[in-house]
Image (cartoon, rainbow over all chains, first blue to last red; front, side, top):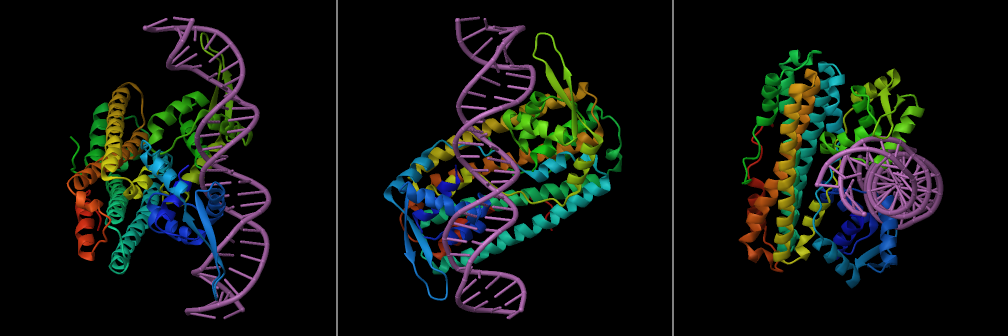
Length: 213
Length: 213
DNA sequence: GGAGGCATGTAAACAGTTACATGATTAG
DNA sequence: CTAATCATGTAACTGTTTACATGCCTCC
C-alpha cells in the first residue's frame, strides 16, 4: 500500500489538489511510482475520511474550483511510521525483459528489430529525464528549497538515471553480440564450454566498478 | 496482461504443472516477473478454456496427482504475436526509492539505519543470484539446452545481476556521502551552487562506461 | 509429533486501469 | 473549431494478494 504514502509524503510539505499531485506523479515521482487520477481522487477521499489529511475548497476565476489537501498531525505520524518500517526489496515486473527472455521463438532479424525499437525509446526517455533535471536545476534557483529535501531527491533521481542508462547499455551490447553471431540462432545444443564463453560475453561488459566489498 | 504470456512462454518448451511453473517464477523468472499459485491456477484454467493450452492428468506414487499442461498451436501463435508487439517501456514501482525520497522527514541517524538494512538485504540477494547462476551453469552440463534459449536467458540474467549491483552501489555511495555530512541535515535553504556540487557528487559516481553515443 | 515439500484449488479483499461523464477557458 | 489544460469524480473491469481448505509423504 504505497500509493497512500506517496500522497501523504507529497502533502507533508505541499498543500495540493489531486490534479497537482498527478502532475508530480507524471514528473519526478514517475521514477519510483505512478498512478492515475481515477485512483488518486478516491484515495484522497479515503485519507480524509481517516483523518490523515484535511481539505479546503478554493474558488478560482477562469479555472474550475479546486480542493486543496493538507496533511494533519495524525497523517504526519503515519508517514514517519511508514518511513521507519524495515525496507522491502522491490519485486521486479518488467514486461520487456520477459519478452526478451522468450525471444528465442522469433527469428534473429525480428529480435534485432525489437531491441532496436526499445533502444530508440529508451534513449528518448533518458533525454527527457536529463532535460527534466536541467529544468529542475533552474527552478531551484528561484524556489526556496530545503537542503535535506534536495539531498534525498538528488540521490533518488540520479539513481533513476543511472538505472535507465544501464538498461540502454544492456540493449546496445546485446544487439552488438547478436548482430555478429547468426550461428547462435541455430537449433543446436550448447556445450558447457560454449555456455561459459557466451555468458561471460554478456556478463563482463563493464559494470559499475563500485564499492562492493 | 503479461502473466498469461509468462505461462505460455514457459509451456512452449516445457510441459509443466502449475506447481512446476511456480518454482520457475520463484527462480529464474523472478528477475522479471512474479506471481503466486492462487493466481497461476485460475489463469491456467482460463488459458485451457480458450484453447491456448491443453492438460493431461498424471497419477503419481507417494505424491499427489498432477495436471501437466502443454501449449497448443493456437497458443504458440498467440505467443509469437505477443513477442512481435512493440515493446513498452517498463513503468517503475519501487517502494524503497519512494521511502528514500521522503526520508528527509527522518533524523540522519534513522536514514542511515534504513540504508544499512537495505544494503544488507541487497547484498544477500546478489549473493543468492550468483549462487543460482553457478547452480544453473552446472545443470547446463547435464541438461540438453538449445543455444538460442541460453543466449537470451544469459542476456536477461546478466542484466538482472547488473541492475541489482547498481542498486547496491547506489546505496553504498549514498551512505558514504551522508555519513560525513551532518550539515546537510539542517533546516536550511540551499543555494544554487551548493545544489550543483551536491547533485554532481551523487551523479558522478561512475556509471557503466558503456556504448551510449 | 511437527515442519516442510508436493499438489490443487476457492473466496474475499485490495489495488490498479480504462471508460464514461461534465464543463469552462485558452491557445493555435 | 479543435485540441489541450484545468478540475473532479463514478463505474466497470482486470489484476494481484492473502487467507482458507485439503491431504499424503518424508525427514528430523
